[in-house]
Length: 341
Image 1: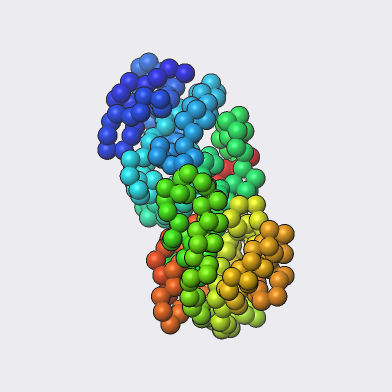
Image 2: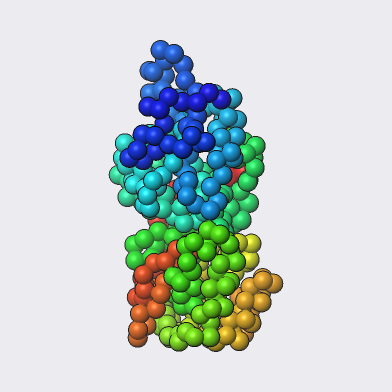
């Protein structure tokens, strides 16, 4: 793999990039017209990566690029320079690539989908995920490959599934949105601790605030739409509410056996208590895959609902902070093509 000239390196607003990470390209002298053809566009890959994230793996990205190049693909590795840049790139109607690969965690994937949602172009590129984040729940959900060989093969085979996402106050979420204790932890965990300890940072933060917090009741109202079936118009009160697309939560742990990001629909998991003892009981049930069957837990299929509270309660989507209640949650209607192994 030959390194690019500085002019060929794509790195946000700055044309220079770290010496250890290079954009890889497969080019033909005098063949610039070929790059504008549909065939060349289809075989182009843009990899977006955050070089300051804890899971950043430049050697993995270079290995993937080399494998794709050897099969005639054009590959560019672009390092982001600021928060929100992935979304800006994906929202650009001038974006031209056959595959856009996000090297990161669930939050980075969420950012890409938010950008695609805002993109006015007729068709978005196919989305690929290179798992490099803290939890990578989406990768666990779809059993995505993690090796350079497997990821490159996935991009070459181009087998895709529809990725259906939900909306929280209009903002996409791929996996889940929640309000309550887990969202408080997401808001409270220090970024430096998260980068250093990964998932353990959430556990330590949860233990730190569990005995000092004062939770609030959450009031859930399921929408009246016929899509909500027998639960249309139902109301309930809980202390923690998770509205999920996915089967998994926090990694490999099953929270909703009937969930699925490749088909329409949401599920509401409501926990009636959030005391330290209840949190321990629910946590153990999550580890054994029986949370939805545990006393004090309610799991129902929904299409839309609202979450309100007397005082503002922290919320999160896909593992990142997302303001506070109230929340209006609905199923999205613009699925994206996601490559799978």
